[in-house]
Image (tube, rainbow, N blue to C red; front, side, top):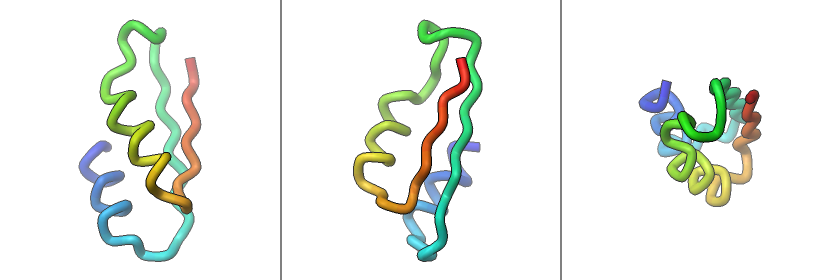
Length: 51
């Protein structure tokens, strides 16, 4: 999942990217900092967290 997101962001295909990440709770939220950084730097990335 993360590899696919990273590839889409790196290739900047010009398409909108929707990333939905479901987690049990905030304490077990893997890769949150990385995904948040991608969102800050990628205008076409829509990020949704489901807790």
